[in-house]
Image (spheres, rainbow, N blue to C red):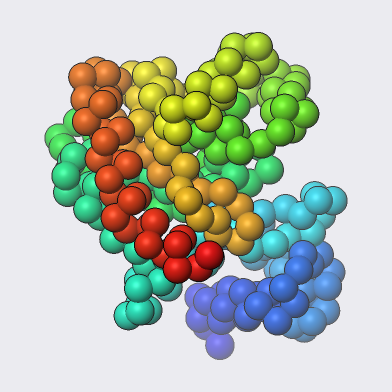
Length: 254
């Protein structure tokens, strides 16, 4: 079997194995279950991790699928599932604003972009699915962080400030972050005019649903000057879109 075809088959077999196991699995277990060499299994899982389809388990040696896997085929299902409705909502927001629309979920200490609707404007941010941003130092990361306990926030700040990203992006003040998170919880949205990308900003909001037990956030991203000028318009667009597309699913599931 040609190498490219073999790799494609193995990716699908790995995902099917996780569907059967429905838990974390180590490189050794996956190789044993599927009859693969350890070395190629390790490389395949590392590639899926880098692409954002797998995350590490609690022990850092095992793997588990991310919500990005859940979203892969949601558009195919003709029924109005919540996941498919999120895709429709994001497409609508993209048409209304011309800006980049981003869906994110937390993966350990990062916010992972699960789905991105590219901007249609000439000046645009270039991000794609699988992009990772620090929870404590990014717009959608802080929206997701607002769902976590004070102890968890403190741990993430300490880890960030002791890690290599602090040298690149600066240390994070725990007190300032806690004040910002209190504001996000009170308002129900975040407006960030100084993001990880220089000159970029974002208006973000939590979604009233989870995916794989993880919170989800959606954001309208673009250049900070545009975010500043249109922030209330974008907040209203997000709220209205969430109410129309997702609240009915939440009520019917209750």
